[in-house]
Length: 259
Image 1 (cartoon, one colour):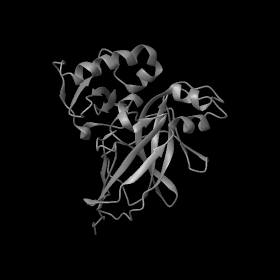
Image 2 (cartoon, helix red, strand yellow):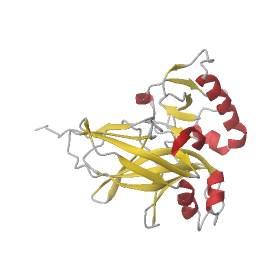
Image 3 (cartoon, helix red, strand yellow):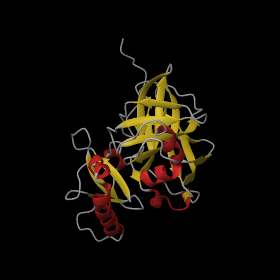
């Protein structure tokens, strides 16, 4: 299933289920209003959301509405924590505040992309197999840094269960293609091969993780030289061209021309 959090004036947004083709959505009211509620009681609530997703995909919900990614917050705006595992195995931890996919950057910054895994409760010293069992949802995240200081962490609009990834999910790995547009110009497509279970197990090596922790497997840095007024779009897609998590589509704040 595909889940998103629609902006409603609250800090966490309102949980919606999104159709497989990303055209329709339906509020999860009556099951849960926030994604963290679902993560806290996954065994009971997730099957109900899956039933709702099946009905949505078959066009059987009377109150479905067109999905608009511009109305989305990050799927989990306030996570239990955010940690990124680099290619060298080093772990970097941050607070876990996620900005919406369309939120403008305040200034040109350096982007570091990660495949993000949202976990259920996971015990300390868990192995990769146990980590995969605790894996609940996946999404795409970019850390934005300016002079080595984290200024924003931005998430794609959708968080999805691994089974929803189709051919991009193989033996516990995500194999997909990262597409980029810089100021509307296509950039070289980057092949992605990430192991979210290994990243979860690495972070849980010394301490337990609780439901709602988000762990990223680093996918590398963005090489585009960004300037004020630029636009950037990132979209992780299957080999067939289907978007997995919706696009991160943002503008960099234009120069301040105030005298």
